[in-house]
Image (cartoon, rainbow, N blue to C red; front, top):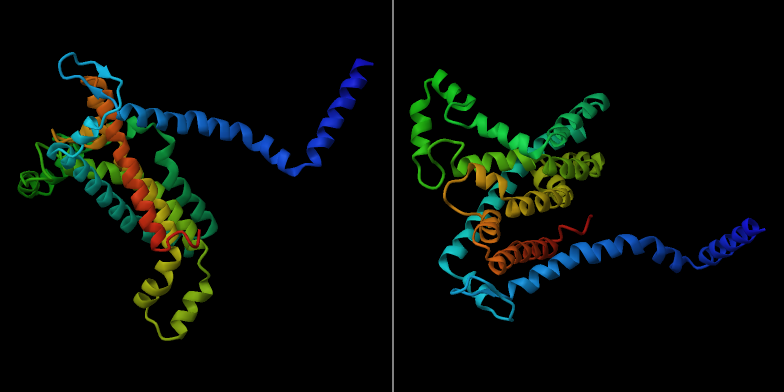
Length: 309
């Protein structure tokens, strides 16, 4: 009898929920929205609150009083240099990834057969199947002074050119594994799949008839690319750039392993939080990438990059 009563109650509850679509939607979204609010927004709120505290210069302890002293440190020349260096690196990585990804994505979307397309999908995503640290350490060996790049340079008698390049200020260093160039190359390698896939998806949505119509109207391939293909696939470029730009802004492993003494945002946050214990300054620094990404998204929206998404 208890079983029948329980079954009737379940039927009544399910009928009650079924007749109220808004209630069904609320019950469906409640768990993920709760997780989003507590874990994601809660952590951001915690960072924001801590960024308004400051570190006492005498005791070295965090003073939990509202103050803008920590944010004032972000406008010091050293901090502005970190923001500028990181933003420029992220922009260059994004631009290089787009230039490399677009031809490959176009070939996958337009010319590859179904079987070859599946193979290319696997090859593009294959690096993502392995550990991030394994891939980074592999490039550390590749770019080392005794690595395969230096070996090829020696075999082709290009040591002089490599040594000259490493002596250039701003891009060189003791070796490619300890240089700004090394940081750039590894960033492009790590984040390139995140640029290829969105562009390829956007290119597949472009009707082939539009490209044919452009040619029928007298446009050459370059004109068709700039006036038809690129504008219609631009949402995919923006989607990929969001990944590459934001991930490059906050990464600290690659700059720590391949960079020189110059700090990037992620490396600075790690140093302030872990080494010096200056949690308020570390929290304030994390606000920097958030502001940069919000500004970037607003500019992209103004350009109409999201209209076709």
